[in-house]
Length: 309
Image (tube, rainbow, N blue to C red):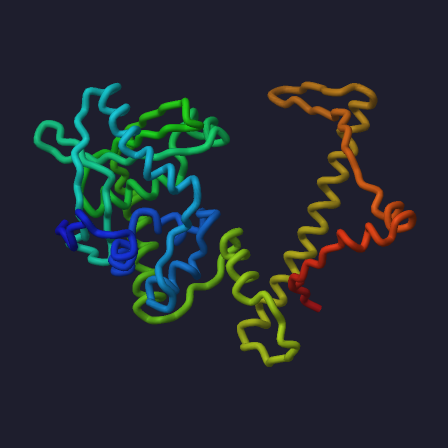
């Protein structure tokens, strides 16, 4: 491990540029395809310098930064452990593409352990009750790979009024998987300048829909490898339809057992068929009775639909 650059006094734009020199802890979940907000395509474009690096700026990230010192203080108060700042971007000696920007370090018995602070909405409370979200497991294992640390203290303020702190031990198998995944992305995509194969994540779907939002009306000859994809698409579509039919059949059989009863139990399962009331809007009636008002509130939404025939 070595210091790539000191970050004390560095503005956010410069800090983001330095992060393009390698793969940071928050990039790992993107490469793994489990980040709902960022696509591996966006990450590749940033790392190859094709777009300016950006980080989603919203209330969540803003208050996450504002509350980080609060989380640190509360952690120290509850544990008696002192969190020290590490104002530097660290780089792995063995794998120079692996970078780490730590929230803090904790020295115990002459050894350096790591500290990471998080904030989350109340919707994440159940996840934090059970353990640590997978994206943060990947992040701190990445940091431990860079630094050689044996454990990370992870503290989280959830919903503004629930505080959790966990100890994440070093996991050599997980680290090996992370290194292999990052190495492949860095060497085969970033250094080679080859865009990554699209995955099925929501972030990648959103990215492609936004990047190619409009059609020019042209027809092109697809590459040879697209033939296999078309056949696979057709095969999977058939399987989905068949599975949906099977699921509907099972659902109807369970309903038939319940009849007018709201719920039933068997083994470890509880089956419910509840009465639900929903409010609808009679669009056709409004169009018939007051067409002017109806047309005044009409909106058009354009999007592209993929079909394989």
